[in-house]
Amino acid sequence: MPLEQDMINILQNQKTRQISFSFTSSVGGTVTVNYSTFQRIIEGLQNNRFEVTDQGAPPGGAAYNPNSSIAGRSGRFKLNPTGGVQVAFESLVVHESVHASFDLTRSTLPWVDNEAAAHIAQGYYYYLSNISPNIITFEPVRIARQLAEYIADSGFMHGQNLQELRNSLLASRPYQNYINGTFTGNE
Image 1 (cartoon, one colour):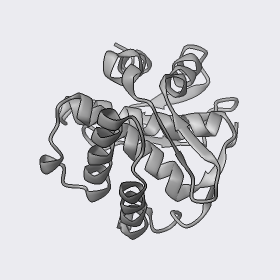
Image 2 (cartoon, rainbow, N blue to C red; image 1 turned 30 degrees about the horizontal axis):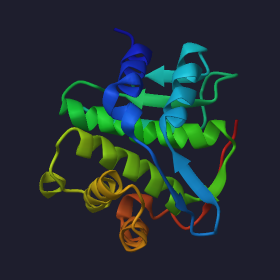
Image 3 (cartoon, helix red, strand yellow; image 1 turned 90 degrees about the horizontal axis):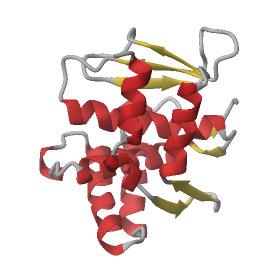
């Protein structure tokens, strides 16, 4: 099955359809992720707006880059569904699709909020897959998984937990070269 179809299947599944939340960004705007976020990516995949490659992602990994090596494409997904845990791969596709959606909508928001939204969507996917936060080793994803459970149970975002997630992202080594900056979508 082509990688694009793998992505579409993940983004159309019952778990992804249930992901829905919004929060006030650190600069005052509203950040929303819901099924329309993922539908936007599905339509982009169906209309060949993204480059999708199996090169450059670690086993079981996924990444999104807003720069495609193919003229006229919005961005590039790097996917490697083999060699990892399936639910982890699926949650990464959800995570990276949030970034791509902000790219398509030409959103401008702090990177910390872009990453927070993607991590919460990933955490929500883990929650809906019955993955315990106790087995998640990367702190931002563990916090996001706990926050997603709170959202699912109460219907709203807990500000203290959101700030804990932001603080964790700000302190995490993988994000240090950009997390304090501003994301601007390029579509």
